[in-house]
Length: 155
Image 1 (cartoon, rainbow, N blue to C red):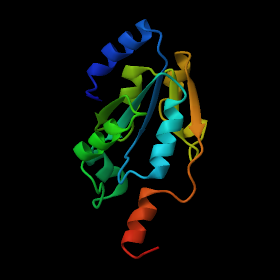
Image 2 (tube, rainbow, N blue to C red; image 1 turned 180 degrees about the horizontal axis):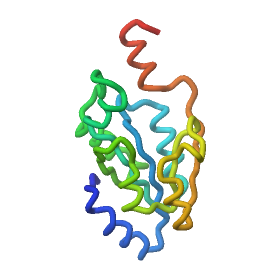
Image 3 (cartoon, rainbow, N blue to C red; image 1 turned 120 degrees about the horizontal axis):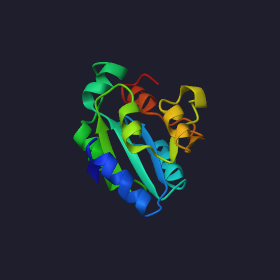
Image 4 (cartoon, one colour; image 1 turned 90 degrees about the horizontal axis):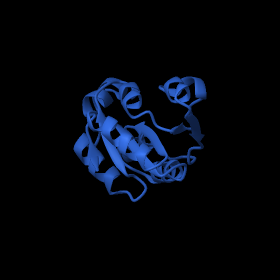
């Protein structure tokens, strides 16, 4: 189910009342591939409910340049929400998911193994509320950038 930023506080309250462990991760998730799916499945295994923060199209363009994203935010949200391991998707327009993390206050904040605890945005917020940060190893050789390069004959 796709949520708005305003929905997060109510969701957090509802899930906490039910004693559920909330897991959060975020990303662009453009041209969904096996690396994304493996990562999201591993994230979901860390708790009861997986909320995925999705960069808006404007945010992706600022972060990755004018040729991205390949797929629109609505298409990316639809594909993510259809995955069994994803419980909720929330779009954000900022360059980082800090506002989403601050509203949701997940029990587990997940990022890929290309991050360190020190480079994970919102790690301090989660840990101040008793949560933890988990880094999941990436599936080797899988990235949207490499898929785009191969499709253009550049790799």
